Image (cartoon, rainbow, N blue to C red; front, side, top):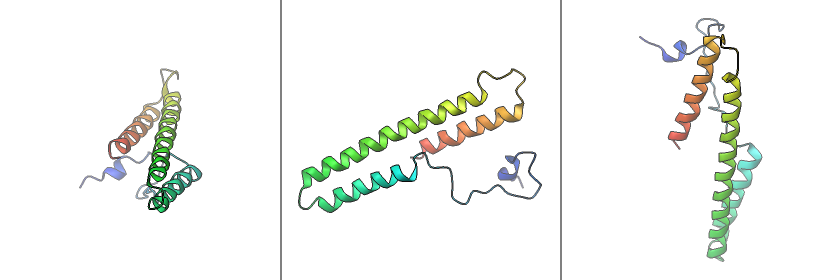
Length: 114
């Protein structure tokens, strides 16, 4: 049976040992940024009954900030990935290029599943 996880492991890893990430992919936003946005949404929900328009404005602002921060994080991730392979020696090892391709695939798949 074909084991896709094992097939994608780097060749320097001992056989039979898995590179499973228990926490999933690295978050695009830091904990502080996520906590701030979640806090703003929580405040909007809690104040909706008393001030619905202000609560909606707060929720909209949290949404706008989340989008802007994600766009910036994705642009930075792209820049780092691009630097990892572009402009290097044409003799760059296929394994290094394969790793870059895998990273592009993973982040693109995450975006498509939002």
